Structure formats: C-alpha cells, structure tokens
Image (cartoon, rainbow, N blue to C red):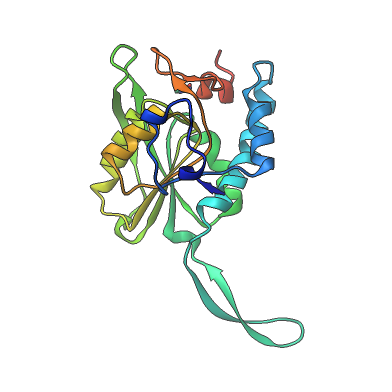
Length: 227
Ligand code: URA
C-alpha cells in the first residue's frame, strides 16, 4: 500500500494534501475490481459482488495494525503460544445507506466486530449532511472505529459522522472508502487531521453536484439497484 504522499496527483498539486494519513490501497486486485465496478454497464449484482470482494481486501489493509494478544493453544503436535485479535473491540460504522454495501465484506474478514449505523442524507441544495439516525454499541470508549462509506466526495457526511463519533471518546477512528477526490480528502483532513483515510482510488475532481469524476456514479443506487 503506497502512502498518498508518494503518488500525489500532479494535475491538482494545489489541492493535494501531502501526508501519510492517506493510504492508497493500490493492490492490483483492488484496482482491477474497482475498474470493473466503475463501468456503467456493470449490473447491480456485479457491482454488489465486486464491492463485497473489495471490502474484504480493504479490511486487510485497515486492520493491518490491529493489536493482537498471545494465547496458549494446542496443535496436534504440541502446546504453543499464538496470536489472536480481539475483533469485538472493533466497530464498523456504516454511513447509511451506501456504507452498508461495505459491511458484509468487512464482517466476513472480522466476524467478531460490532456494527454501528449513522444515518445522514445530503441536502441536495446545500450538499450538507443532515443526521436522521445514530445507533452504536455500548462502551465506545474502549473501541476502535472504522467508518465505512464507499464515496468520500464533499466530505460533509464523513465530517458529520466523525464529529458525532468523537463525542463518544472512542480509542481511535479510521475512515475507509472506495473512492475519493482531492476535495474530499482536503475537507476531511481539515476537520479531522487525526483520522487516517484508506481508499482504493483518488479521482480527479468533484463536480458541481457533489459527484466524483470520473467516479462510478451514485454508489447507493448502484448497490441497491434503485435507479
Ligand atoms: N456519492 C456517490 O454515491 N457518488 C459520488 O460520486 C459522490 C457521492
């Protein structure tokens, strides 16, 4: 995985925040699947399947530095000390509704993780985030949070979600998306410079309607087949 500072976008140097808090997941399998998802003729089923597979691959990257503990086990040959993770300390927080498309893949890699949901919709005129739902597990102070949303576009939903989550004093917060753009990164990092961003691609720009270009269209509609 390349730190973003090594692959910054030459076309938008003025907008490109250079730091090691942005992790570009540039694994060939991730890039290949993302290309297939972007195609406008990918069916809902194909899109969802690819998102599921990509989410598993991204889960590997985002959990790379998860703490482990040693436990004693017995192999068929002898006793030994071996590492395990405490998946229950991890919370995947889905920004509804498109974030739900990432949950299944992530949970298949970390089945013990808890799940929270934040409901935010984008006001179509102002593009600001309005909260309508917020449900988290208990004891958030003891937990590491991974916020998931396929698209980090204006950054408004991500910022609003992280604002709310920080009120619960979690141990850490990371943000995972499939796609972002220089504007989304700049906005989230300005509001929350401590939150690392994991993404499979940093696209060219945001258009006037808050869509990422070239992007993949409306992620929610493509996951749920609502358009
Ligand atoms: N949300 C989407 O679903 N797509 C975009 O391009 C931007 C935000």
